[in-house]
Image (cartoon, rainbow, N blue to C red; front, side, top):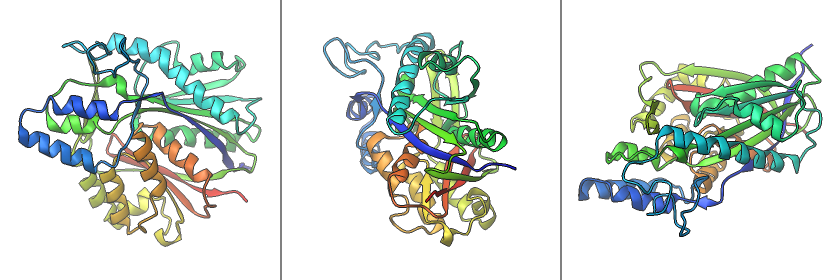
Amino acid sequence: MSSTAHIAAIGTAVPAQDIHAAFIEWARARLPDGRAVRIFDRMAGRAAIAHRWSVLPLGAQGGSPVDPDGFYAKSVLPGTAERMRLYAQAAPELSIAAIEALRAQVALEGITHLVVASCTGFIAPGIDQIIAARIGLAPSVERLLVGFMGCYAAVAALRSARHIVRSDADARVLVVCVELSTLHLQDNPALEPLLAMLQFGDGAAAALVTAEPAGFALDHPFATTLPDSAALIRWDITDQGFAMHLSGEVPARIAAGLSDPVFAAAATGGRPRLEIDGWAVHAGGRSILDAVEHSLGLPADALDASRAVLSEYGNMSSATLMFVLARMLDGPPVTNGVALAFGPGLAAEGFGFRSVA
């Protein structure tokens, strides 16, 4: 008989350097004219982001990555190889910081499976192997690396952990999401890519998923895709890092999709909206959260956890949803919750969850 899987706890970590203000100054200087600057300033002011954190080192004089002595100081930005070398060093370190934050809440002995999600870097041996070795996991631990799925990869990682626990009630699954989006700054003077880059920061989260009744019980997962939307969110691997394409059409397409009862039912796992008392929505941007809130007719405070994460950290790709769930674990009990994330496809993926008494 299948077991119910539970998120016992979630630990989170971000780097020490806040790069949000420095990026805004850098981006404004690259815009071609005053009109573009005014639009950028208006959108930056409406973004509802106060901080974004980066693993990039301080410059020799203590400045930000875009200062004259920083990582992005040269007229030609670093190549992909240099960015991946930094990923190989910083991604495991940030992941382990999140794992230690998790360890402060729950015991992590006896881990049987490790699931790692990341779309902002590649290395072999994989980041999963590096993390496993550094935290002393047994060589027999089964590993799964979820790569390049983007913002909804946390859903895929937690869904996989749920499947593992439901097939083996003794499984203890460590789930890690780590993203270093600031490694992929692009020197593109166009307004849309600069606004896309304005959203992203670095972060890591770690969760323990077991059959033991604690935290959030994980209910049925769900997934769906908006038709004719594949080009709206895209990562292109270039000689100078990964170039993010995030179309300004995304919020409107999400809003239109969620206004369709068939798509809305698929994107919420078929749960009646009036019965849902906990919404963990990936904080992909203020306009995306607004689209979800307005299209589904949610109360004004329904997405407070998502908006708080967006303000404090920006969009950390796959790690973001875990940050929202971590905040909700510390909040009021949830009887019938929905976790929802959007990403390349344009796909919507999620799962139901509920607090364990």
